[in-house]
Length: 230
Figure 1 (cartoon, rainbow, N blue to C red):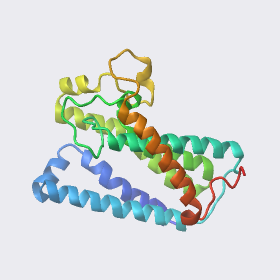
Figure 2: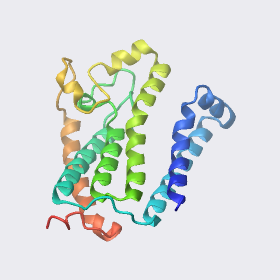
Figure 3: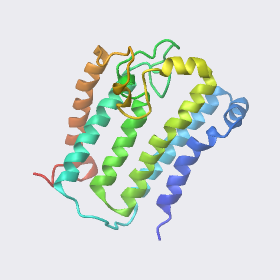
Figure 4: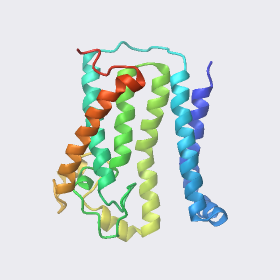
């Protein structure tokens, strides 16, 4: 049995799960400094993620189901949605979750946060789930399934971290009108807009990214995503 893939998966998960142990993150920051801690965290995450991908590509193929056209269509829809969530999540200031744009405590106002307060994690989760569906072998289920479980399972951990960092009262005020569950907040009454300029531009940027990935998938990965339906 090839143990490289499960070992790489464990090493990828450890840097993300261990800091959630009460008191450990402040202790590491005290020892390394905030910059040192963040640098080590990013470097270790990047190295283990690259190893995880390489280990998945090197793992022996053990098929579980035969690919059908409907699986390709569903995968394309999920990846396109994930691309929109990725671009919107990166472009929107978000004090409740991961984001490249800093946010003040009163800036949880973007329309994407009505879809979910964790757009970047949902983007990774949808990407993982879609690739489990379209591949259907043991190595892909381990690789992409683990990434999807990590992304979706990290949301409540991140919520608890934000609650502790900001205080429950402030977190409840900021998170009102948003939800972990994708699109669940659309069915609740609140003041956050359905659409704003950032979300519209993110839809355009997300589809541009989707078609770019579709074009590059064959040359880089060696598999034409449309091969089973054309």
